[in-house]
Image 1 (spheres, rainbow, N blue to C red):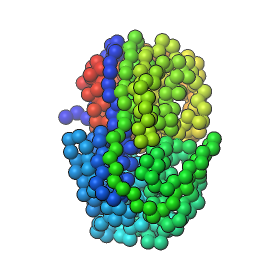
Image 2 (cartoon, one colour):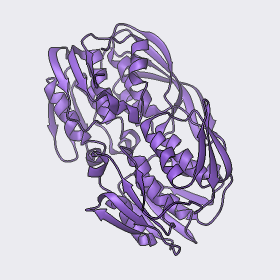
Image 3 (tube, rainbow, N blue to C red):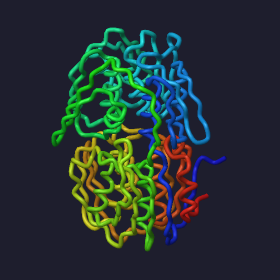
Image 4 (tube, rainbow, N blue to C red):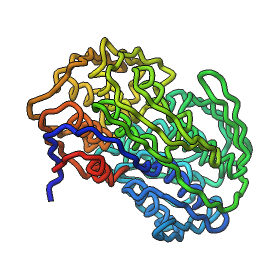
Length: 441
């Protein structure tokens, strides 16, 4: 079976209702937290993707009993530091940076050695950002030039630290928070703004945590060595997986889409704010709070004219996974769009700043790319009629989805390789596009 898709027709006018794909970040976090709870936890609406399934496989290797049912996943927690595994156990995180960095935190107090591996893409990513705080806690890590594979050996003598996380990485922050669960005393983190799912879950579980917020940083304090009880949790929809459909509606003619059950946590809704400033009509409906998270339906209508944007730095961490789609929207905007302080895009599954820049150049858009910035000269009249082949992007699921939306809204004939990349986060992506009316071979 071919691992590529061909799109040679723009999508026709549509008016559809879809349900949001389950949130990947929360699915992984629920599993890791449930594994360390006391008793059996049930997770409903868990994302069925490679990243989440690899998380469950990893927990099994750590001696955790779990069962996947049709409508839920049940995990029998072992309590804090209750994992049971053989020395030199190997865990393969495949493509999941969230799993790889967060699992380092829950292994901080293990006396046996764990070997952490990943696929070619994950093995190129920087792990010094979690190695440094874990070393300060007392964890011993042998690495391949600060990259995978890692050989991790925890310690019974973890010591609380004060750490400044200035990248704006929720993965780094969460890794330290998870390590703090097994650390005596109070661990303190001064963290640049990033998604706050871990903090909200800690609060929901009544884990002793204090958070003081300022304009650019959150100061987090966690009191360790407090066992917590099992919990049931329903995973809301993923705004990152909803974003391709937001852009599909915005860039199509005379169309609209209602996406139901989306997690609209303010630390994740940068794409909504950015696209609204660009003149896209997005209406948030039926908003409600669930276990600290906000869930709502999103109504998106097609946009007759897009405005360029000078994107403020404050949106960066809130839209970090959605920038390829935002850049695509800017290609159709009137004027020049400016983006700065985006070097973190180079640390994702692929160098998304470079790859998206090259993609825009390929379809005829003038761009100026620097180490941490991008300038996009939009063309509201952009229509494609050539053939384009999209490959060699490190099998990055976000790039694949962005290329599909470009093909369905700009015209031309696209041959997009590495379809299997979406299995990491959104296996049903193509199926849903077809339900909306896309012709994909």
